[in-house]
Amino acid sequence: MGRRKLFCEYGPVCYRVSVEKECLRRHLRDLFHRTRFAGRRDEREFPVLAKGHTSPILRRLDGVDMRLQRNKAENLRLAVRALDHLVIRPGETFSFWHLIGRCTARRGYLPGLAISNGAFREEAGGGLCQLANLIHYLVLHTPLEVTELHHHSDALFPDSERRVPFGTGTSVFYCNVDYRFRNTSEVPVQLLAWVDGELLCGELRAEKPFPLRYRLIEEGSCYTREADGFYRNSRVYRRCFERESGRELPRELILVNHSKVMYDPSLIPPEQLAGEGTPCR
Image 1 (cartoon, rainbow, N blue to C red):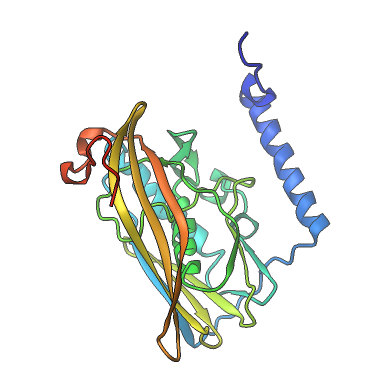
Image 2: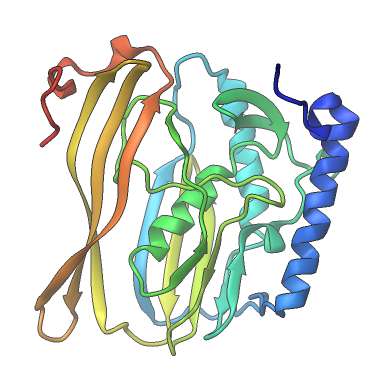
């Protein structure tokens, strides 16, 4: 006997009704829990740089139309306006979608690359995962608490030009797949985000330095061949150092990657493919 179809699978209208129902449930849940969302801005830049990062917007990806990459650049320019100079005070929660809102053509968002269930499609506002990825990377270098995160479960593209540990990104989809963090410190922090040419830029700043400094490292990176295909494997750790003394504290394991490769496996570097039965180092 086959699996019973979900209501959302009966067509586009049913799918849209299901999405709106989940959005309403999310809003009611936030209201019930009295979540304090960050929303105030300060045009004065906070004095302490906790972490900064840039990432290239236009990347040549196998099988992806560059038109979608150029559209992504415009979508990012629109989205950063909702986040730039945002202040997250102690006890407040940052919500990606609470600030950016629904991405529609009426608001100027263009069709960009979106990923759903491991498949690519065009969608208004597509490409904003890159902005969520950048913010999450900044947050991982602070003591702020990530309260909602949805990892990409698959290795969708080769590691070309990768500058951050694999798997440290996050999926976002309005409004049920959000990215959120809470300022659990005693220090107000400020998010800066902007587009500079073909670069997406971001900084997390604070009123005063945090007691610890952080550094991410990736170990045991390799590919393995398994019964149902190839997998990208690694472990990501966070190293913590006392700011005043420089003493290193026990490192934290923050992520174990075991992600199915969804692109052409011939693009896997041969030297990174572990032999059958050989563990990654």
